[in-house]
Image (cartoon, rainbow, N blue to C red; front, side):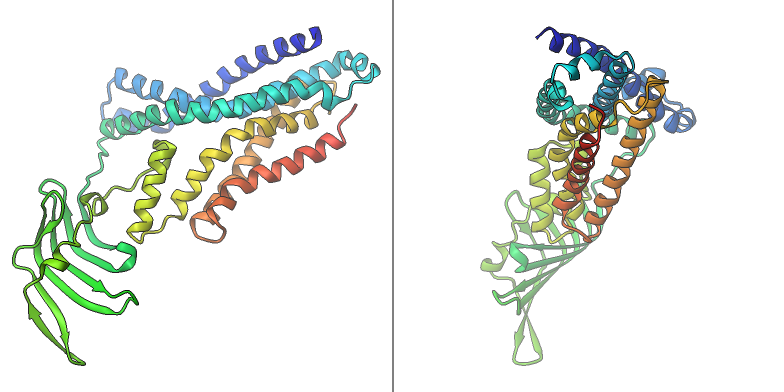
Amino acid sequence: MKLVFYMYKKFFTIFLGSLFFFVLVLCLTDLFMNLWEYISKNAKLTEVCKILLYYVPKSIWYSVPIAVLFSTAYMLSDLYAKNELLAVFASGVSLFRFSAPLLLVSLAMSFGLFFFEDNLVVPTYAKKVKMQEFVLHKEKSLNNDNIVVMSQGGRIVWKAASYNEDGMTLANLYILFRNEDKSFDCLIYAPFAIWGETVWLLPDATLYKKNGDSAFVALSPDESHLSMLNEPPETFRNNTVNVETVNTREAREYIVHLERAGLPSGEARSLYYKKYSFPFVVFIVVFLAVGLSGKTRKNVLIISLALCVSAAVLFYIIQMITMLMARFGAIPPLTGAWVPVFLFIAISCLLLKYAKT
């Protein structure tokens, strides 16, 4: 038991120091990437500091896996270099058994990181993005142009020249109604439409219906068709949501909105699955760190840092590739989010098999 407490004390001391270092690097990187824009837009120092403060939880979320990887690898390598693990191995304790308490801690941290991201990282990062857009004069308008939307399972297709958020209006609106078999039913044209709390109101609208094989007849829209025009204004807004700035519940609602509107949802869905896969990287990197430890007895700090940074960069590159493939439909979104995780599980198990014991 004393050995476990000794290991925990050594691990958490290194972990907190490395976490602070990686968070500082990420915050400074974000600052220097936007520094010229802050200066050109005459941003106040207090505003810039507030943006950085809002970015700290996100930086912690990114840094925890790297810090766990580094602290575990450095701790074990240091124990190797000082021959402290020789006594442990001589007593019949395997490297895996010796590292088991770290696996339990990393598993608990994985669950904690998920709730930390969903309840603290998401709202603070959203505030960071919003304030940064305000300071840099990049506020996004909800007005939209050239809109095409499908609703009610594709039975109604909307096409509008523009949407105006101030008055909640649509201009040059065409609404195509289709039958159950997706064949043409009728078409409504309205030069102007306004949201009336529950349905869209269409002054001066005209309904076109087939009269025979090729002729069309112009009629006044009937109540049965007008009552179906209840698609909310949010559907027509320029409301592209960054899934990283919303929690899992809001991300699910946004994906449902995209699918209902007939819009591509692959990228949003892959980012949604990433919310679940990324925290468990903390658990995986302990396996990786155990496998990487003991590779050298000299320059333990530098070697451990280099190995961990290389492994982290490799993971993020693979994740970026799989997420891009999921975004463009080459692979399913679930695969794009989880393939890097399972790949590194395999690599970690392989390294652990050939680790020095």
